[in-house]
Length: 242
Image (tube, rainbow, N blue to C red; front, side, top):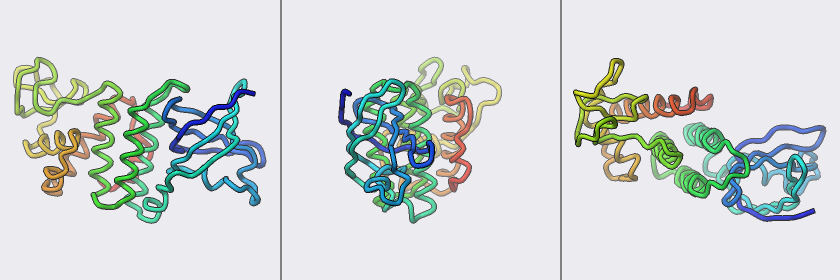
């Protein structure tokens, strides 16, 4: 039975039979993978706790006909230690895991940028130096950009005219000039569009100077933009303080 190794972030798990679990994870080289972890629900399991959401692990897999089987697991980083005991960090982190699961939907298709982005986002979130809402919104925008849905916050998303512009429409891809605006477009403040651009580019100095109302308006637009491209809202986003 062929074996292979890879690093992964555990996204979610669900029960299989009396003692096993199916683990869904985002790996560095093999993209989204679902694999069976045998016996991990037994109290005698030596590595069941290493296969919980938020865990960064090095794994060995045995290839199977339908699902691969995890045969070894070594912990690299326990992100849950810095995330799980804080409600805001936990809910933001859960939304990040769900986003990765939804954006990387083809199993076995390499998605190294999404993997590295998730690892980096969880690391910043676990450190606790930045507001969870800011970390989450930055991650959501960047993951959408990597997936090919990069929003425009300065130039008009339709004609390319340099801004700043007054209008914003999620279905059109971002900021719109007066000529290109369509019915139903939002009119965020200039500060909100600047904040969104800073979140996307990683300009944390600008992000940190944003007023609370600016940050909250930006979060609403990020959530709407994400829902449009995923066809529905994230379930976990309902619990995030926005």
